[in-house]
Image (cartoon, rainbow, N blue to C red; front, side, top):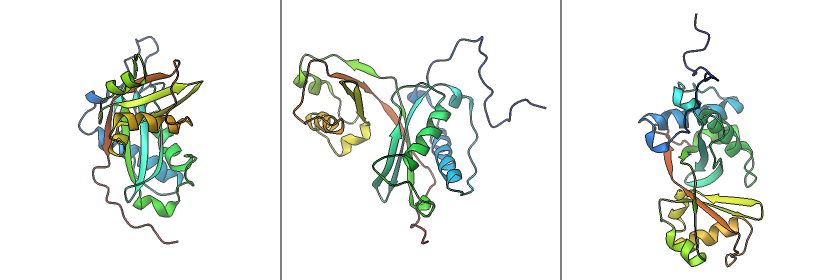
Length: 217
């Protein structure tokens, strides 16, 4: 009789070297189904809705960073994530799915009647790399529209824009200004101790989910 359920990876052997974090570009073709299915099953369970969770392959046990984004009719309903790979990717998706649904301070907690009308996207992040700049104009020139996710750090605070935000702020200067405002800084702010880093993502949408109208209570 196996010691561990076949649908869950066994814990790593502490005597073995820790595998590297998940690289989003190396994820298998069915990763989107598994990641979005995991996020939906966690949210559904907390709302008392029966949804069968997907199988959990071994790569979910490797460290990974994710963002979970909820939308309804194309409008943001919640988005929470991690920019550093500090825990197993599967756990990170679970935590961020609950955060996006119930703890995003911009929104009221998701209600059971909204679940069927809510679409889920899971983004898996690469490791961040610092951007070395001479001045703000140089930093702006280095940004790659549609590719870079950006982390801005200043005075012990940090904020990020996923690459998906380029769709709304396609100009590099506007992208950086918007991120400064997200951190609570003026759009024109700059300082010598600003820190910037970038990452790329692989974003997964639910492959077979068809958003339904909100249930009436």
